[in-house]
Length: 293
Image 1 (tube, one colour):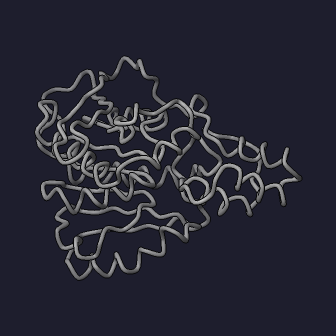
Image 2 (cartoon, rainbow, N blue to C red):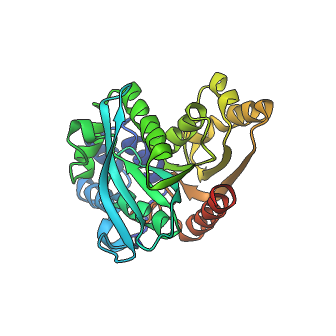
């Protein structure tokens, strides 16, 4: 769990722009210096906002309760092949339902691998694709990952995630039931997968952007949507999305977690809100149980 220095409120919207590629590292530091006590304070602030993967890890990569491996699926409409990380319980009796875990806009980093193992321990075949695989995969550095993400072909990246979902549906480890959970960019992709894969049983986007309104009637899955209270960029799309969901008769639940920041489930950074994250995660596992088991 991330426990770091208090973050000035002015830093959150600035950091959100930086995280999503709307502001360079230099731009963040220059603007943060105005309220962080100068350049040194701005650099310390950015360091405090950066993830601490080791401190937040909940399930070790070699946890004896799990089997893990690298897994690839064909992606003819994307980059040819989608690669990722698969985890499942070691003592599974028979085939299990599957859950696709879609990362934020940094690729398959240690945090998302840990989330994947957490999902697997709940009784699922969990698979996390790596959108950065065509560019060499997660580079081990968040700033470098941020730069690489801007070089992706967005259409091919989306196609790779959809291909991962379809691959999981047919994978020998699974029983044909499929859900998806995604965070930030992955939340947007969870919504997208729901419009593209009619066999999907449930989609759980955490602070994800809405799909195109004309695609919403194609959604057959049940939706559980988690939004941060302080997330103007993402929340601006919700009223229109909700109207489209109602018009299409899609079954959904939506929760806004007051006072939280975009990324509140990410326990590697100070954006983490433990109370809201636990509540959202409990709701997520409950809807997986209701729809997949």
